[in-house]
Image 1 (cartoon, helix red, strand yellow):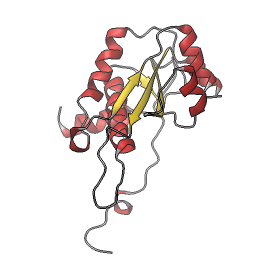
Image 2 (image 1 turned 120 degrees about the vertical axis):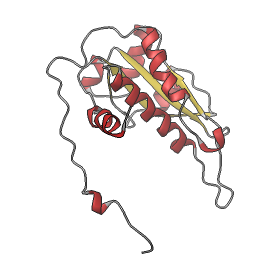
Image 3 (image 1 turned 180 degrees about the horizontal axis):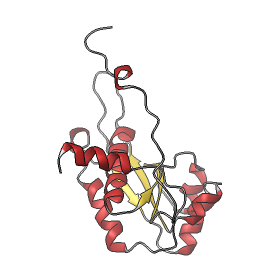
Length: 175
């Protein structure tokens, strides 16, 4: 893949909020999560765990944790969790890199899903306590995001990305 192809992949990734009822195979879910498995993390700590609901009852439990109608259309979910105990902490100020590391892994998932023809969306505004209860998530893990995943519904088009001009996000040298 060259830089133009990667830029096209990144452009094609969007927050999908409407999915078809076409099932996603377990093999394809594993393939997508293998991309997260390859993600870099601070000091290679890999402080992540991905929970995949295993049946309709568990998928419904995810839906109950995020009160938006569109999420019901997703055939599958990936719950991305981080372990603050396993993550690297910067010595100079104690900064915990769990969120950084898990976020890199999540974006690897989203890009791999896009390459496979799947849609995804980062969902961070969910009821953490309810999700923790529904999935018996231990205290040492922090639920960071829910990733609905599936084939986009018909007519679900890539939305034009609104981005700041590149000149506003680069600073050469000191302030």
